[in-house]
Length: 118
Image 1 (tube, rainbow, N blue to C red):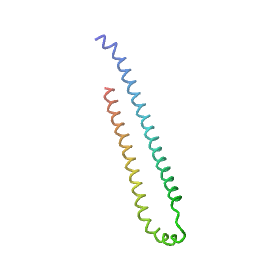
Image 2 (image 1 turned 45 degrees about the horizontal axis):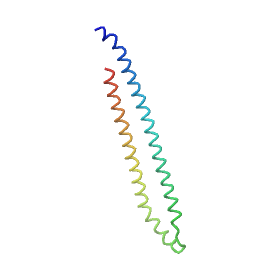
Image 3 (image 1 turned 180 degrees about the vertical axis):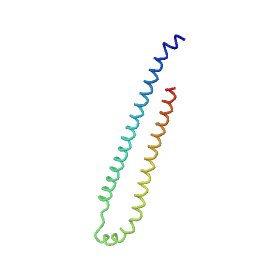
Image 4 (image 1 turned 30 degrees about the horizontal axis):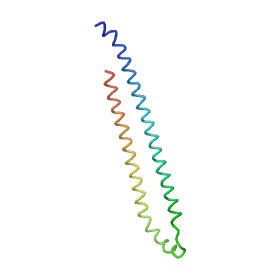
């Protein structure tokens, strides 16, 4: 019984320290997840800008065809809008996946901390 009284405080201190380290790790992972999300969004934006610039550079049309394309611009707005909607949907799905991963990690951390604090 004396051994338990001597070792229990040290063991509890080690458990508390482990809990704090897990909490710090969770916060760092959260920050990292946010930075990754911002990086992905920035990269996606850069790729879109580059793609749009490349399309403008390669889309040289003779003056005679400009008249024809003026009427086709109205028709093209549908697919462009659909593509934009798909892109937004894909980004929302990616964002939800990141949040789901973060919340799963938070839940796991909470379970571990509850287990360690007992």
